[in-house]
Length: 102
Ligand SMILES: [Zn+2]
Ligand SMILES: [Zn+2]
Image (cartoon, rainbow, N blue to C red; front, side, top):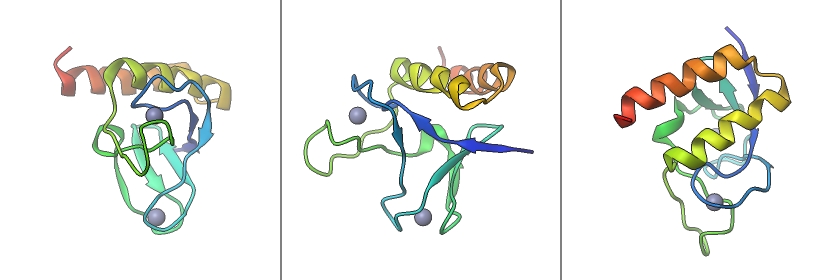
């Protein structure tokens, strides 16, 4: 069981800038577990990555969007740069593939 810094591009849009994502509910840092759950390090809210919405500032003011599968793949691939093992990234992508029916 390990968790990693969630430092990625936006899972929901074209914006390629990488961010340390912050939970809008409480301002806590977000981390990603080996199984694809995102967890707030402050209030401990947790849920699978597909069940969160993201606001990178590029969608308009306070517009939270659910992940777009292609953008989410790009975002997850970049986690290898924060040392998440590729095998875990592939496992998460497989879960996403099944959930999205792609
Ligand atoms: Zn975005
Ligand atoms: Zn929180």
